[in-house]
Every structure is written in structure tokens, then in C-alpha cells.
Length: 226
Image (spheres, rainbow, N blue to C red):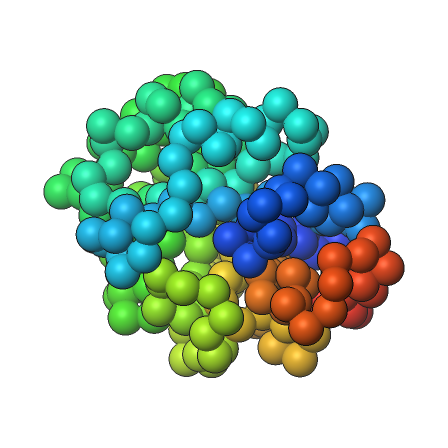
């Protein structure tokens, strides 16, 4: 578990925001108490969807002071690291299956002076991250299959989260544990109790059932922290 009194980091996923009014959405979610902005980069190859590129990271950087948490669901990764780093990413998280030499990929990310992360899909074995622990600042546990927002929460990956929480605490690794997929006010309790530091939430906060408003976003972020 995170240390007593440590605030859970809330990272709204902009994939679920109103993209035609993205700056307005970023302003609202920031005032509502968001800690990071999460951006899903998909290539239509590694995952079955196509989303954003480094240009959008650059544009967000011009209008927001919040850390930009970039989740790279692309393959290959190495040719794009320089562009995302220069665009202003604060964290770059990769899937180890997407490159032949993930350790080298993490080294390249760190060479830019930014934080490096590893993402584990629901089917990814936890052992894949062990040789990489000295290189990572963040481990992202996917509780849905990557590619689309709004999927149902899978509880099985929380077993990996609990194991990693104990490992990180026992060795005092400076690594944050992040969870993405089906995060809402019901599942957040189970996720936080399992040891998460960071909650990525898209569909729940940016609900299409209600109009965008500061009050709605603030209420939902507070519900997650409770």
C-alpha cells in the first residue's frame, strides 16, 4: 500500500475526453483536481486502434503544467522515443513485448531525462518485468486488454499488483504502481487496497452521459480518492 496519508494520483485519460474541445477539457479536469494527464498512443498495429502522435503531446504541453503520462501502445517503439521526449512527455511507458530489447529501449527513454515505465497486459507474465526493475520509474498494470476505452474491469491482474507492491516496498524501489482499465468509484477501492499509487480513469470521469462540467469532474475525482 502507498504510505499512510499519501494522496492517490489521478490521471484522467484524454482518449475519453471531448477531443473537439480538448483544451477546455484539460482546463476543467485540472481545476477539478487531476494530478496527471494520461495519453494513450495507439498505432493500429500493436493494438487494434489508432489515436495520437507526438504533435498532440507538444500541443498539450503548451497549455498545461500537469505531467503528461504517455502510454505507448506501438511497435516498434525506438524510432519514436526522441519525438515524444522532445514533445514534452513526462513519463513514457512501453510494452516489453513491443521491442526485442526492452532494456535498451528504457535506457533510451532515460537518456532524455524523463521517467520510464513498463506496462503489463492482463496476459503478460509478471516475470517479464523483474530484469527491468532497476530501469523503471513506473509499472502500469492493465486491467483491460489495451486498445479501447470503456471496457469492463478485470480483477485477475490485481494479483500481479499485490506481488509488485510487496516487492517494491521490501526493496524500497522508487517505482510507482499504476492501474488502467475499468477504473471507477467501485473498482478504485479494490485497486487502491491492492497497492496502486496511480489511477488512470477515462470513461468514468469523462462520462458521455453527463455534459462536461467542473462540478462533475471534481465529484468523480473525489469519489475515486475516497
